Image 1 (cartoon, rainbow, N blue to C red):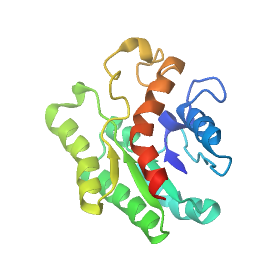
Image 2 (cartoon, rainbow, N blue to C red):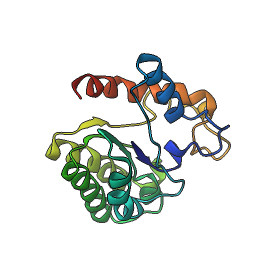
Image 3 (cartoon, rainbow, N blue to C red):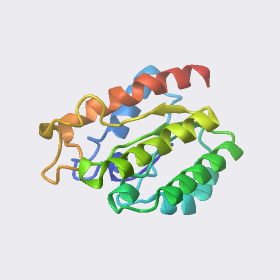
Length: 180
């Protein structure tokens, strides 16, 4: 189950072009037993995720949850402590439901200042370390500084970036699938 925001919901992309759909195709090519459920919502915050995680877990009963949330919180300059606490609550809900967790981090533009952006990045590392989770520190690793991979808003990845995102996710996820 992918539990994220617009970066996972495929904002501004043609239908079925997002990395989550590409992931499902890759998994289906390996085994028809794999199913990917995308419950990502554009504009979602960690508080919104915290409020809906239990229902998503109960409805879909995932073996693995990819948590990709926090970008909207950071872009709004929300308090680091509340972002941390909300992500922590989402992780604990997944653990109570016996789902393996893959935490995906994002980074903020430098105009948010070095202190806030570093504390924001540290949230993902701290939670992953504390709960011994699989972590991808930066969803846009390898291309986040290249404007040609983003839509006109300079925030959302374009269609040509989706395969790169999938490859970043796959580097960690394929190991989790083998052990589940």
